[in-house]
Length: 149
Image (cartoon, rainbow, N blue to C red; front, side, top):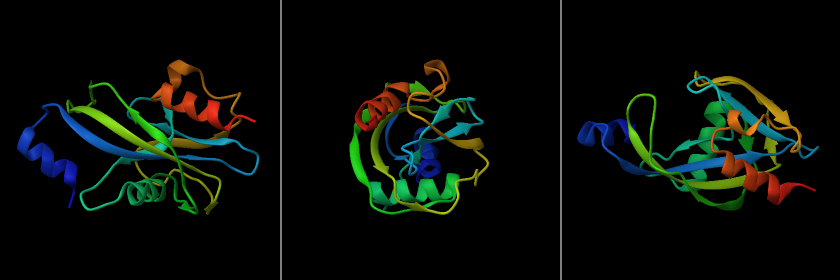
């Protein structure tokens, strides 16, 4: 079942609070995997909305599999972040509560695996795209602060 379509069939574009799961994925050089998104031309971490019946961790793993074709090992909870109410390109109004995990354990080679991405790339933490090119920059900045060596 597509929970978001189901929910939107009842409330239309009205504001809702949604649970989001994301993952900061690091390679063996401590570089961060970023996903360049089509919808807003911004770079972000991998993640998305939970589906009904999933745990937050299951949603994070599913989103990574769907977006960049990786299978993940152990996940560490980085934190829980909120996102102010905003309007998505399709008109839906949403305030997201984001559970963010991190890992350096994965199998596969990262690639764009869905129709949402333009490219994926590992970045050194001190060479990320500029703040104005980042989706949820305060979340990415928290990751950089926690995992910079």
